[in-house]
Image (cartoon, rainbow, N blue to C red; front, side, top):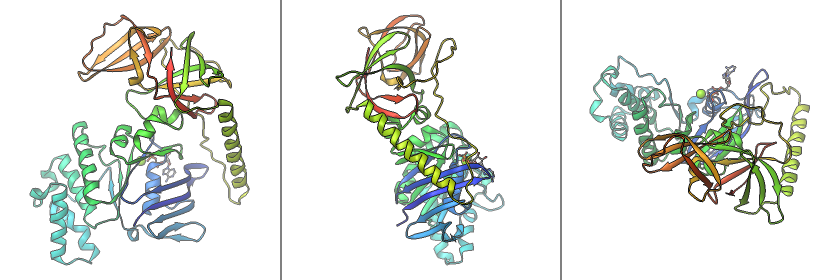
Amino acid sequence: MPKIVLTDVTKRWGDFYAVDHLDLVIDDCSFVTLLGPSGCGKTTTLRMIAGLETPTSGRIEIGDTVVFDSERGINVPANKRHVGFLFQNYALWPNMTVYQNISFGLKNLKKYTKQEIDEIVQRVARVVKIEMFLDRYPSELSGGQQQRVAIARTLAPEPEVIFMDEPLSNLDAKLRLEMRSELQRLHLTTGRTFVYVTHDQMEAMTLATKICLIENGVLQQYDPPLDVYGKPNNLFVADFVGSPSINFIDAKGGQNTAGEMEFDILGGHAAKFSFTSQVNIGEWKAKEDAADAEREALKAERAKVKGYVEKGNKDKVFDYPVALVEDVERPEPAADDYVIGVRPEMIEIREDGGIEAEVYSAMPTGMETTVRLRIGNFILTGVVFGGVTYEIGARVHIGFKKSGLMLFDRLNGRLIGNGGLEV
Ligand SMILES: Nc1ncnc2c1ncn2[C@@H]1O[C@H](COP(=O)(O)OP(=O)(O)O)[C@@H](O)[C@H]1O
Ligand SMILES: [Mg+2]
């Protein structure tokens, strides 16, 4: 069945690499979201798989068929790839009824009888719950209902893979939430492979079986949502997913003989980071350096190939945000600089917490309260569940969870490991 395999796929315009040597395997029946900031290459990736954009180089397989191979000169046209689309600006024919809108594409295929078409229209209309609107015109439907018609139209020719490019971004927040849940059901009932583009991390997190997170054309991580959340490959990924955003704490220090990292954090507080599974920091760095050298060698190899073009949109280590009361210049990173990643729910406000903080702001939503905590010039954001009220300016003590925090290398921005922080 249609497992999709991308091998070393690149798309560039001039020296701008929209997609940079992408390897990706999309399993049959999965729901993969392509996630990343605007302009990172999501749509381009989707369009290349669908056959609407020709890669500069690489190979794409859908099921047992090679649909694109730059070396062998294969390029199967979009209409022969058995894929369906749903775009952000789906346009329904205003002069056709819902029934006609759904059946229009099927009639063009010329492979169904009138009765078969009728059965298909009734079935897909039932799936997306618009069977009562079949005789209406699009102008007689709400935005959400129009969206359902567009989905029904996509499903009608029974594509094996369904591509969606930000299909919900024109809907209001409440409807978007509802449609998300419908899409999840739809994925289940149709049993098809869904590839879904979004820049909304919450949408990607809640829908996907796997998230493919891209930045500057480069794949950053391809994992199930909770792994992306809990074990982000690097600072960029950590920052991109999660709301409120993760806290980054600069930490200076090194590993003691017991394997713990002894740090100085938040302007003079001693802290100990203990790895959940043991990491030898010297060995970790050596391994990373070796991997970097290998990547450099590969780049040098590529540069020798005729027609090579150097990437104009250079890749940079992510400049992670640190929340401060007053902006100060941060010193250049050194080898003993690390960054601790703390999700808001990993901060504990408790009497025996080792760091004193001041409540800077508190925003209760009823279900939870987002609390900003000031420690000297630093601000950390915590989330406390339940209806707790905090007085602005109150003195509290904070500590951290014993697992689930992340330690990153500041020089290369990569995840070293998970662990807990004692202060
Ligand atoms: N036809 C084109 N010519 C030149 N640059 C393009 C073209 N299409 C897209 N790009 C650029 O490629 C990058 C990736 O675009 P796209 O895949 O649409 O991003 P997104 O992740 O927002 O969907 C963007 O910077 C865009 O400007
Ligand atoms: Mg796009």
